[in-house]
Length: 135
Image (cartoon, one colour):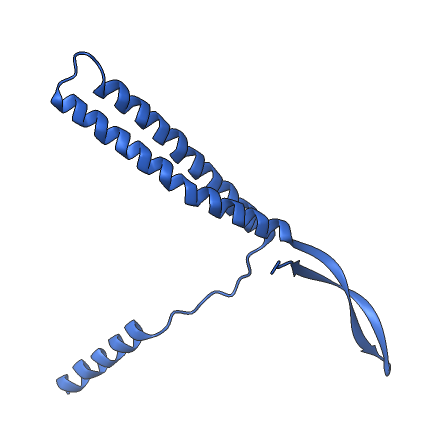
């Protein structure tokens, strides 16, 4: 009886751990893309300005007249981190622009759709989400 419960528990644990997660099928709206673009743009600017500040601080620390070898090393490390931060802002600017273009290309408008009414086809206006994809 103990072996059965152990194997049953093992089977249940493996089924749970290897099962695929349930995905949420919510659609991304225009406002979601705009908010994502705004957040990425803000982060990119923080990285860019912060990187420039680190480069300037590293230069000031490393090039002072009283600086020792350790101070110069600290300045080089700070300047290097600033350069990496500025390089890291570039992909965020690019992603922000892509998300902004996606948001601009999405719009909600009324489309005419044929519907059958008493053996006749009539065109009724229904709200629809359009997404323009340029190829």
